[in-house]
Structures are given as structure tokens and as C-alpha cells.
Length: 144
Image 1 (cartoon, helix red, strand yellow):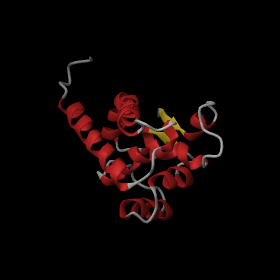
Image 2 (cartoon, rainbow, N blue to C red):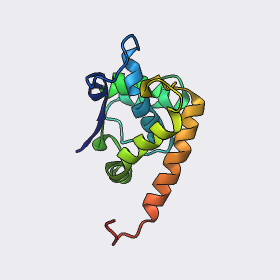
Image 3 (cartoon, helix red, strand yellow):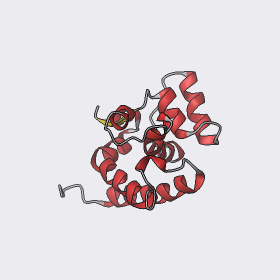
Image 4 (tube, rainbow, N blue to C red):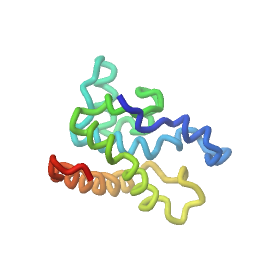
């Protein structure tokens, strides 16, 4: 079970702007989580409360970064995803973060000023869809 990301890494890194709500450190993780939930790639919930929270994200009643903070303790592990998505994330999550930074942070004073909104989520979901499809088409015998 690999840890892909953790809000505490961003809060303790010295680059997080003072005065910004700590939830802003979870926006990029939330974009990935929302994509996984929307595409049916999130793992099976272990409790009814977790199932309800997943449904709340899917319906827009809960923000994805709120889900990350409240239900995932600010962390994203491969074990939270279905097997295929976990393998994808293990290989491609860092590239996703680079895509996020290059796509959504232009002109902002900090990576943490990206708004959690439907337009940004849609943009990143399209990028993730493309990366996931490319990853699935890779020959099983190639390691590069």
C-alpha cells in the first residue's frame, strides 16, 4: 500500500502561504479523488458512512477536498482505489501532479491558490481520462 499524497506534506513544506485555509493543501488531491469516484475507480467503502460520503462527493453535496480531509485523514493511498486504478496511480500520480501544476496554476502566486470548482475538476478529469486510457493501452511486456 503506497502513500501517494498527504496534506501534511504540503502544510509542512514551507511553501504553503500563511493565511490560506489549510484545506487548500488538499485541492489537488481532491481533483484526483473526484475523478476516481466519478469514474467508479474508488475502492469499496467499508462502512455505510463512507458509502454516504462517496455518494455525497459524486452528487456534489460534499467537496472532494472535504472528503479527503474528513474521510481520508488528508491522505491518499493506492489501497483506497480499485486495483486497476491503484496500479495506474502508482505509476502516474506524479505525472498527474505535474499536469495539475502546468494546467491550473499559471499566473497564480502559489500552487495552493487553485480554486476547487467544476471547471478545474472537468479540466483535470479530461487529462486524467487521457492518461488513464494511454496507460491501459501500454503493452504488458514493456517496462518503459
